Amino acid sequence: MSTDAAGNWPAGYGYLPLGTVTSTMEEGRARRAELAGPTWITAEVQTAGRGRRGRAWANPAGNFAGTLVLPNVSPETAALRSFVAAVALDEAFVALTGRREAFSLKWPNDVLLNGGKAAGILLESLTDKGRITGVMIGIGVNLATAPDPGTLETGAVAPVSLAGETGLHVTPQEFLEALAPAYARWEAQVRSYGFGPIRQAWLARAARLGEQITARLPNEEIAGTFREVDAEGRLVLSTPKGERCIAAGDVFF
Image (cartoon, rainbow, N blue to C red; front, side, top):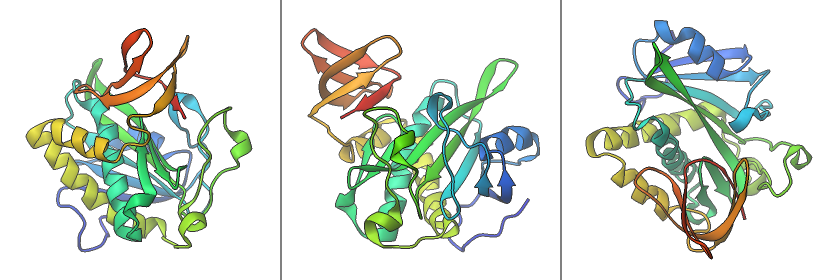
């Protein structure tokens, strides 16, 4: 295992950089037994990267593809790590660009840059004898280029790249060196104080808070005003039929 990283690399976190893989998620699952603790796995190229609900995730050269394998996470809080990752991603973006107002967070797992999708997050559980014991946090960031909008479903937020929107050229390694310590700080917060501080930080960065949005579920679409994210990470909408709390779904603006 490689541990080569910058001097601000967080204590207790391993680092495993790879070349071409099917996906960093698959590498994390295959290698979990050999990992001593929380470990970042990155790849130069993914041949079968994926996003939520099995969607393909393109990863051309120059973009960031990584998975944080995070053991020892309670089943009750595993799903909340998408919010931890989102806040850490936002912090890394702002640290690298100095552009606080350009970034926002879209429930449940996207980072927006000037209103376009710059990064996505995918969670997968680690289990032992049917019990959740940890989580893998897959992260893809459009640093150099963005995928073709024609590959997206109707109404999805258009993808953008950091270079295309800001003119800044950040390498995947440079991005990881900003992201890893940011994530470690927020992970320490959630382990010490619970979801409350993460929830407040996420809401402070939330896209379209207080505005009309649509949540698309497998069997229905719900339009309403985005009121908040509750203590369980659910999207709360005010609709003509009353308040709806949504645990999983896709949001459209």
